[in-house]
Amino acid sequence: MTDTGNKKKKKKMVNITINLPNIYDENIKKLIGMKIVASRSEAIRTALRDFLHDEYNNLKLLGYWEEN
Image 1 (cartoon, rainbow, N blue to C red):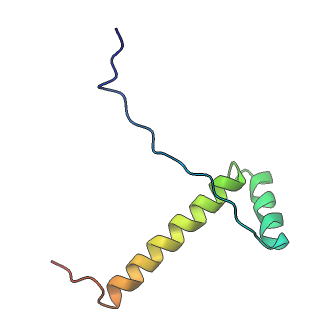
Image 2 (image 1 turned 120 degrees about the vertical axis):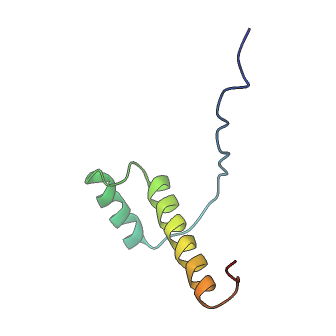
């Protein structure tokens, strides 16, 4: 009998294709070499997460959402 009720569900990932300037890729490879990020995917996820967080905060400051 397996206990599936207590297992955490993994977040689904989707594969996308993007085009980056060579300089971005070169710098991501440097970050990987310096062990700052583990992979290109992690570097891009981190950059996108930070960008979306900043934009959300900018929109809040501009009054797009009212604080309760």
